[in-house]
Image (tube, rainbow, N blue to C red; front, side, top):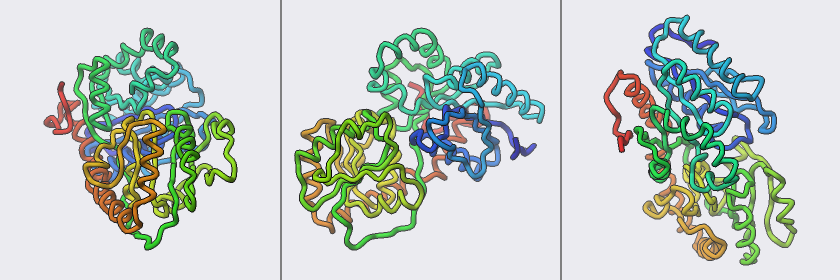
Amino acid sequence: YSGHSPSMRFHAIHTIGSLGINAGGPSRTVPNLCDQLLSSEKDVDLTILTGADKRFGANVMPKLTPVVSSHSNTSRAFRTLLNERIDNIAAKGQRQLILHDHGQWLAVNRASASIARKYDLKRIVTPRGMLTPWAMSHQYTKKKLAWLLFGRRDFHDATLLHATSEMEACELRDLGARQPIAVIPNGVETLPDSQICEKPKCVLFLSRIHVVKGVSELVEAWRSLSPGGWNLILAGPDEGRLLDQLELTPTDNITYVGQVEGEQKWKLMRDASVFVLPSHSENFGVVVAEALMAGTPVIATHGTPWKSLVDRDCGWWIPMNVDSLKETLKTAMQVDQASLQAMGQRGRTHAIESFGWPSIGQQMAAVYSWMLGLGDMPDCVQLR
Protein backbone atom coordinates (compact mmCIF):
# COMPACT_ATOMS: atom_id res chain seq x y z
CA TYR A 1 0.00 0.00 0.00
CA SER A 2 1.22 3.48 -0.86
CA GLY A 3 -0.14 6.94 -1.37
CA HIS A 4 -0.87 7.71 2.29
CA SER A 5 -0.66 11.28 3.48
CA PRO A 6 -0.91 12.12 7.20
CA SER A 7 -2.93 15.24 6.33
CA MET A 8 -5.78 13.19 4.89
CA ARG A 9 -8.89 13.34 7.07
CA PHE A 10 -10.44 10.04 6.02
CA HIS A 11 -9.84 6.90 3.98
CA ALA A 12 -12.30 5.21 1.61
CA ILE A 13 -11.96 1.53 0.71
CA HIS A 14 -13.75 0.61 -2.53
CA THR A 15 -14.78 -3.04 -2.82
CA ILE A 16 -15.67 -4.53 -6.22
CA GLY A 17 -15.93 -8.07 -7.53
CA SER A 18 -13.67 -7.55 -10.54
CA LEU A 19 -11.73 -4.90 -12.42
CA GLY A 20 -11.37 -7.31 -15.35
CA ILE A 21 -11.29 -5.75 -18.79
CA ASN A 22 -14.39 -7.78 -19.82
CA ALA A 23 -16.34 -7.23 -16.59
CA GLY A 24 -18.40 -4.30 -17.85
CA GLY A 25 -18.64 -0.59 -17.09
CA PRO A 26 -17.83 -0.65 -13.34
CA SER A 27 -14.33 -2.02 -14.05
CA ARG A 28 -13.62 1.35 -15.68
CA THR A 29 -15.81 3.82 -13.83
CA VAL A 30 -14.67 2.75 -10.34
CA PRO A 31 -10.92 3.25 -11.03
CA ASN A 32 -11.67 6.53 -12.83
CA LEU A 33 -13.76 7.80 -9.91
CA CYS A 34 -11.04 6.89 -7.41
CA ASP A 35 -8.31 8.51 -9.50
CA GLN A 36 -10.41 11.67 -9.81
CA LEU A 37 -10.91 11.79 -6.03
CA LEU A 38 -7.20 11.34 -5.36
CA SER A 39 -6.13 13.93 -7.91
CA SER A 40 -8.52 16.67 -6.80
CA GLU A 41 -9.59 16.11 -3.18
CA LYS A 42 -7.02 16.75 -0.43
CA ASP A 43 -9.16 15.20 2.32
CA VAL A 44 -9.54 11.63 1.05
CA ASP A 45 -7.22 8.67 0.61
CA LEU A 46 -8.32 5.52 -1.22
CA THR A 47 -7.73 1.83 -1.78
CA ILE A 48 -9.55 -0.49 -4.20
CA LEU A 49 -10.05 -4.07 -3.02
CA THR A 50 -11.03 -6.51 -5.76
CA GLY A 51 -11.15 -10.16 -6.73
CA ALA A 52 -8.94 -12.05 -9.15
CA ASP A 53 -11.43 -13.63 -11.55
CA LYS A 54 -9.53 -14.78 -14.64
CA ARG A 55 -12.78 -15.13 -16.62
CA PHE A 56 -12.82 -11.36 -17.12
CA GLY A 57 -9.23 -10.94 -18.28
CA ALA A 58 -6.53 -8.66 -16.91
CA ASN A 59 -7.52 -5.90 -14.49
CA VAL A 60 -8.13 -2.35 -15.66
CA MET A 61 -5.63 -0.62 -13.38
CA PRO A 62 -6.13 2.95 -12.14
CA LYS A 63 -3.29 5.42 -12.59
CA LEU A 64 -3.19 6.71 -9.00
CA THR A 65 -5.24 4.50 -6.68
CA PRO A 66 -3.61 1.49 -4.97
CA VAL A 67 -5.31 -1.84 -5.79
CA VAL A 68 -5.27 -4.89 -3.53
CA SER A 69 -6.45 -8.16 -5.12
CA SER A 70 -7.69 -11.20 -3.25
CA HIS A 71 -6.33 -14.49 -4.55
CA SER A 72 -9.56 -16.25 -3.62
CA ASN A 73 -13.08 -15.06 -4.48
CA THR A 74 -14.68 -16.30 -1.26
CA SER A 75 -16.40 -14.18 1.34
CA ARG A 76 -13.98 -15.44 3.98
CA ALA A 77 -10.93 -14.40 1.93
CA PHE A 78 -12.35 -10.95 1.33
CA ARG A 79 -13.17 -10.51 5.02
CA THR A 80 -9.60 -11.44 5.94
CA LEU A 81 -8.19 -8.99 3.42
CA LEU A 82 -10.54 -6.22 4.55
CA ASN A 83 -9.55 -6.79 8.18
CA GLU A 84 -5.89 -6.47 7.22
CA ARG A 85 -6.50 -3.23 5.31
CA ILE A 86 -8.46 -1.70 8.16
CA ASP A 87 -5.75 -2.61 10.68
CA ASN A 88 -3.11 -1.15 8.34
CA ILE A 89 -5.02 2.12 7.94
CA ALA A 90 -5.60 2.42 11.69
CA ALA A 91 -1.88 1.86 12.32
CA LYS A 92 -1.15 4.88 10.12
CA GLY A 93 -3.31 7.04 12.36
CA GLN A 94 -6.36 7.45 10.14
CA ARG A 95 -9.41 7.13 12.37
CA GLN A 96 -12.11 8.10 9.86
CA LEU A 97 -12.89 5.22 7.50
CA ILE A 98 -15.66 4.56 5.00
CA LEU A 99 -16.46 1.48 2.91
CA HIS A 100 -17.76 2.02 -0.63
CA ASP A 101 -19.14 -1.26 -1.95
CA HIS A 102 -19.99 -1.85 -5.63
CA GLY A 103 -22.56 -4.57 -6.39
CA GLN A 104 -24.94 -6.70 -4.38
CA TRP A 105 -24.73 -10.47 -4.70
CA LEU A 106 -21.01 -11.24 -4.80
CA ALA A 107 -18.74 -12.57 -2.08
CA VAL A 108 -16.92 -9.24 -1.84
CA ASN A 109 -20.26 -7.49 -1.23
CA ARG A 110 -21.14 -9.90 1.59
CA ALA A 111 -17.69 -9.39 3.12
CA SER A 112 -18.05 -5.59 2.97
CA ALA A 113 -21.42 -5.72 4.73
CA SER A 114 -20.09 -8.10 7.38
CA ILE A 115 -17.01 -6.00 8.12
CA ALA A 116 -19.07 -2.80 8.26
CA ARG A 117 -21.26 -4.38 10.92
CA LYS A 118 -18.25 -5.71 12.83
CA TYR A 119 -16.50 -2.32 13.04
CA ASP A 120 -19.66 -0.15 12.94
CA LEU A 121 -18.37 1.56 9.79
CA LYS A 122 -20.22 3.87 7.43
CA ARG A 123 -20.94 1.96 4.22
CA ILE A 124 -22.11 3.32 0.90
CA VAL A 125 -23.47 0.83 -1.64
CA THR A 126 -23.52 1.41 -5.40
CA PRO A 127 -25.62 -1.53 -6.74
CA ARG A 128 -24.25 -1.17 -10.30
CA GLY A 129 -27.47 -2.42 -11.89
CA MET A 130 -27.70 -5.60 -9.80
CA LEU A 131 -30.99 -4.51 -8.19
CA THR A 132 -32.93 -3.34 -11.24
CA PRO A 133 -36.28 -5.11 -11.81
CA TRP A 134 -34.83 -7.04 -14.77
CA ALA A 135 -31.79 -8.14 -12.76
CA MET A 136 -33.97 -9.22 -9.83
CA SER A 137 -36.18 -11.31 -12.12
CA HIS A 138 -33.21 -12.91 -13.94
CA GLN A 139 -32.44 -16.24 -12.21
CA TYR A 140 -35.35 -15.36 -9.92
CA THR A 141 -35.30 -18.40 -7.64
CA LYS A 142 -31.60 -18.03 -6.88
CA LYS A 143 -31.92 -14.27 -6.28
CA LYS A 144 -34.99 -14.70 -4.07
CA LEU A 145 -33.16 -17.17 -1.84
CA ALA A 146 -30.08 -14.95 -1.64
CA TRP A 147 -32.29 -11.93 -0.82
CA LEU A 148 -33.92 -13.81 2.05
CA LEU A 149 -30.65 -15.26 3.40
CA PHE A 150 -28.43 -12.17 3.32
CA GLY A 151 -29.27 -9.72 0.54
CA ARG A 152 -32.13 -7.89 2.23
CA ARG A 153 -30.17 -7.37 5.45
CA ASP A 154 -27.05 -6.18 3.60
CA PHE A 155 -29.18 -3.80 1.51
CA HIS A 156 -31.02 -2.25 4.45
CA ASP A 157 -27.87 -2.06 6.61
CA ALA A 158 -26.13 0.27 4.13
CA THR A 159 -25.68 3.78 5.52
CA LEU A 160 -26.35 5.32 2.11
CA LEU A 161 -27.13 4.11 -1.40
CA HIS A 162 -25.60 5.58 -4.54
CA ALA A 163 -27.75 5.57 -7.67
CA THR A 164 -26.34 6.63 -11.02
CA SER A 165 -29.71 7.92 -12.27
CA GLU A 166 -33.09 9.10 -10.98
CA MET A 167 -34.65 5.99 -12.49
CA GLU A 168 -32.37 3.74 -10.44
CA ALA A 169 -33.11 5.77 -7.29
CA CYS A 170 -36.85 5.17 -7.80
CA GLU A 171 -36.20 1.43 -8.28
CA LEU A 172 -34.26 1.31 -4.99
CA ARG A 173 -37.13 3.05 -3.17
CA ASP A 174 -39.50 0.48 -4.68
CA LEU A 175 -37.32 -2.22 -3.08
CA GLY A 176 -37.94 -0.62 0.30
CA ALA A 177 -34.86 1.58 0.71
CA ARG A 178 -35.33 3.98 3.62
CA GLN A 179 -31.78 5.31 3.88
CA PRO A 180 -30.52 8.39 1.99
CA ILE A 181 -29.78 7.97 -1.71
CA ALA A 182 -27.13 10.01 -3.52
CA VAL A 183 -27.88 10.42 -7.23
CA ILE A 184 -24.55 10.91 -9.02
CA PRO A 185 -24.03 9.76 -12.63
CA ASN A 186 -21.02 7.91 -13.95
CA GLY A 187 -18.41 10.01 -15.68
CA VAL A 188 -16.68 9.80 -19.04
CA GLU A 189 -13.39 11.04 -20.38
CA THR A 190 -13.62 14.45 -22.05
CA LEU A 191 -12.40 14.07 -25.63
CA PRO A 192 -11.23 16.80 -28.00
CA ASP A 193 -13.78 17.66 -30.66
CA SER A 194 -13.23 15.67 -33.85
CA GLN A 195 -16.01 16.10 -36.40
CA ILE A 196 -15.96 13.77 -39.40
CA CYS A 197 -17.28 15.35 -42.60
CA GLU A 198 -18.69 12.18 -44.11
CA LYS A 199 -19.29 9.20 -41.83
CA PRO A 200 -19.75 5.69 -43.22
CA LYS A 201 -23.29 4.29 -43.16
CA CYS A 202 -22.74 2.36 -39.96
CA VAL A 203 -24.74 1.59 -36.81
CA LEU A 204 -22.61 0.61 -33.83
CA PHE A 205 -23.42 -1.55 -30.80
CA LEU A 206 -20.61 -1.62 -28.24
CA SER A 207 -21.15 -3.44 -24.95
CA ARG A 208 -21.14 -6.96 -23.56
CA ILE A 209 -22.75 -9.42 -25.99
CA HIS A 210 -25.32 -10.60 -23.43
CA VAL A 211 -29.08 -11.24 -23.32
CA VAL A 212 -29.66 -8.22 -21.04
CA LYS A 213 -28.18 -5.94 -23.72
CA GLY A 214 -30.88 -6.83 -26.26
CA VAL A 215 -28.45 -8.16 -28.86
CA SER A 216 -30.86 -10.87 -30.07
CA GLU A 217 -33.64 -8.33 -30.57
CA LEU A 218 -31.27 -5.95 -32.33
CA VAL A 219 -30.14 -8.63 -34.78
CA GLU A 220 -33.76 -9.66 -35.43
CA ALA A 221 -34.79 -6.05 -36.11
CA TRP A 222 -31.78 -5.51 -38.38
CA ARG A 223 -32.48 -8.63 -40.43
CA SER A 224 -36.09 -7.58 -40.96
CA LEU A 225 -34.91 -4.22 -42.35
CA SER A 226 -32.39 -5.52 -44.90
CA PRO A 227 -30.81 -2.04 -44.97
CA GLY A 228 -28.97 -1.69 -48.25
CA GLY A 229 -25.65 0.10 -47.98
CA TRP A 230 -25.67 0.13 -44.17
CA ASN A 231 -23.60 -2.06 -41.86
CA LEU A 232 -24.22 -3.03 -38.22
CA ILE A 233 -21.03 -3.40 -36.17
CA LEU A 234 -21.15 -5.41 -32.94
CA ALA A 235 -18.27 -4.85 -30.51
CA GLY A 236 -17.63 -6.27 -27.06
CA PRO A 237 -16.91 -9.58 -25.30
CA ASP A 238 -19.27 -12.39 -26.34
CA GLU A 239 -20.48 -13.82 -23.02
CA GLY A 240 -21.85 -17.34 -23.27
CA ARG A 241 -21.17 -17.48 -27.05
CA LEU A 242 -24.47 -15.75 -27.81
CA LEU A 243 -23.39 -14.91 -31.35
CA ASP A 244 -23.06 -18.62 -32.15
CA GLN A 245 -26.76 -18.99 -31.35
CA LEU A 246 -27.66 -16.06 -33.62
CA GLU A 247 -25.87 -17.69 -36.61
CA LEU A 248 -24.79 -14.53 -38.41
CA THR A 249 -24.27 -14.77 -42.18
CA PRO A 250 -22.52 -12.46 -44.68
CA THR A 251 -25.89 -11.36 -46.09
CA ASP A 252 -26.86 -9.88 -42.71
CA ASN A 253 -24.45 -6.95 -43.17
CA ILE A 254 -23.38 -7.48 -39.54
CA THR A 255 -19.72 -7.41 -38.53
CA TYR A 256 -18.46 -8.60 -35.15
CA VAL A 257 -15.12 -7.01 -34.23
CA GLY A 258 -14.67 -8.46 -30.72
CA GLN A 259 -13.47 -6.59 -27.65
CA VAL A 260 -12.16 -3.07 -28.34
CA GLU A 261 -10.35 -0.65 -26.06
CA GLY A 262 -8.66 2.73 -26.08
CA GLU A 263 -8.30 4.60 -29.34
CA GLN A 264 -9.84 1.74 -31.33
CA LYS A 265 -13.03 2.07 -29.27
CA TRP A 266 -13.17 5.84 -29.65
CA LYS A 267 -12.55 5.59 -33.40
CA LEU A 268 -15.49 3.19 -33.78
CA MET A 269 -17.71 5.58 -31.82
CA ARG A 270 -16.61 8.64 -33.79
CA ASP A 271 -16.96 6.90 -37.16
CA ALA A 272 -20.46 5.50 -36.51
CA SER A 273 -23.44 7.42 -37.87
CA VAL A 274 -25.64 6.06 -35.05
CA PHE A 275 -24.95 4.23 -31.78
CA VAL A 276 -27.49 1.76 -30.36
CA LEU A 277 -27.86 0.25 -26.87
CA PRO A 278 -31.16 -1.70 -26.78
CA SER A 279 -30.77 -3.00 -23.22
CA HIS A 280 -33.57 -4.56 -21.21
CA SER A 281 -32.02 -2.97 -18.12
CA GLU A 282 -29.25 -0.47 -17.32
CA ASN A 283 -28.63 1.48 -14.14
CA PHE A 284 -26.70 3.99 -16.29
CA GLY A 285 -25.12 2.68 -19.50
CA VAL A 286 -21.76 4.45 -19.63
CA VAL A 287 -21.29 3.59 -23.32
CA VAL A 288 -24.19 5.92 -24.11
CA ALA A 289 -22.39 8.82 -22.44
CA GLU A 290 -19.20 7.83 -24.30
CA ALA A 291 -21.01 7.77 -27.65
CA LEU A 292 -22.43 11.22 -26.94
CA MET A 293 -18.96 12.46 -26.02
CA ALA A 294 -17.75 11.12 -29.37
CA GLY A 295 -20.41 13.19 -31.13
CA THR A 296 -22.63 10.31 -32.24
CA PRO A 297 -26.44 10.26 -31.82
CA VAL A 298 -27.82 7.36 -29.80
CA ILE A 299 -30.77 4.97 -29.83
CA ALA A 300 -31.49 3.68 -26.31
CA THR A 301 -34.45 1.90 -24.76
CA HIS A 302 -36.76 2.60 -21.83
CA GLY A 303 -34.81 0.01 -19.84
CA THR A 304 -32.05 2.63 -19.69
CA PRO A 305 -32.20 6.02 -17.90
CA TRP A 306 -31.65 8.04 -21.08
CA LYS A 307 -34.80 10.15 -21.53
CA SER A 308 -32.36 13.07 -21.94
CA LEU A 309 -31.66 11.82 -25.48
CA VAL A 310 -35.10 13.16 -26.40
CA ASP A 311 -34.96 16.18 -24.07
CA ARG A 312 -31.64 17.29 -25.58
CA ASP A 313 -32.54 16.24 -29.16
CA CYS A 314 -29.50 14.02 -29.53
CA GLY A 315 -31.09 10.61 -30.06
CA TRP A 316 -34.07 8.33 -29.60
CA TRP A 317 -35.46 6.74 -26.37
CA ILE A 318 -37.85 3.94 -27.26
CA PRO A 319 -39.73 0.92 -25.86
CA MET A 320 -37.68 -2.27 -25.77
CA ASN A 321 -39.15 -4.50 -28.46
CA VAL A 322 -38.21 -5.61 -31.96
CA ASP A 323 -40.82 -3.48 -33.74
CA SER A 324 -39.71 -0.26 -32.01
CA LEU A 325 -36.07 -1.06 -32.78
CA LYS A 326 -36.88 -1.75 -36.41
CA GLU A 327 -38.86 1.46 -36.94
CA THR A 328 -36.34 3.65 -35.08
CA LEU A 329 -33.36 2.21 -36.93
CA LYS A 330 -35.23 2.81 -40.19
CA THR A 331 -35.94 6.42 -39.17
CA ALA A 332 -32.36 7.07 -38.08
CA MET A 333 -30.92 5.71 -41.31
CA GLN A 334 -33.17 8.03 -43.32
CA VAL A 335 -31.87 11.15 -41.55
CA ASP A 336 -29.35 13.08 -43.64
CA GLN A 337 -25.71 13.22 -42.51
CA ALA A 338 -25.81 16.93 -41.63
CA SER A 339 -28.76 16.45 -39.29
CA LEU A 340 -27.16 13.41 -37.67
CA GLN A 341 -23.98 15.40 -37.07
CA ALA A 342 -25.99 18.25 -35.53
CA MET A 343 -27.64 15.75 -33.18
CA GLY A 344 -24.20 14.40 -32.35
CA GLN A 345 -22.88 17.84 -31.47
CA ARG A 346 -25.85 18.47 -29.16
CA GLY A 347 -25.13 15.12 -27.53
CA ARG A 348 -21.48 16.02 -27.07
CA THR A 349 -22.45 19.27 -25.34
CA HIS A 350 -24.79 17.28 -23.07
CA ALA A 351 -21.99 14.83 -22.18
CA ILE A 352 -19.47 17.57 -21.38
CA GLU A 353 -21.97 19.45 -19.19
CA SER A 354 -23.38 16.44 -17.34
CA PHE A 355 -20.74 13.69 -17.13
CA GLY A 356 -17.37 15.34 -16.57
CA TRP A 357 -15.29 13.56 -13.92
CA PRO A 358 -14.24 16.66 -11.91
CA SER A 359 -17.84 17.53 -10.95
CA ILE A 360 -18.67 13.90 -10.20
CA GLY A 361 -15.58 13.53 -7.99
CA GLN A 362 -16.52 16.66 -6.06
CA GLN A 363 -20.04 15.37 -5.45
CA MET A 364 -18.79 11.98 -4.22
CA ALA A 365 -16.23 13.57 -1.90
CA ALA A 366 -18.97 15.78 -0.45
CA VAL A 367 -21.12 12.69 0.16
CA TYR A 368 -18.27 10.97 2.00
CA SER A 369 -17.68 14.04 4.18
CA TRP A 370 -21.38 14.33 5.03
CA MET A 371 -21.63 10.63 5.91
CA LEU A 372 -18.75 11.04 8.37
CA GLY A 373 -20.15 14.24 9.88
CA LEU A 374 -17.45 16.42 8.29
CA GLY A 375 -19.64 18.55 6.04
CA ASP A 376 -23.14 19.66 5.04
CA MET A 377 -25.57 17.42 3.14
CA PRO A 378 -24.90 17.74 -0.62
CA ASP A 379 -27.68 18.65 -3.03
CA CYS A 380 -27.35 15.25 -4.75
CA VAL A 381 -28.59 13.41 -1.62
CA GLN A 382 -32.27 12.51 -1.31
CA LEU A 383 -33.52 11.66 2.18
CA ARG A 384 -36.78 10.11 0.99
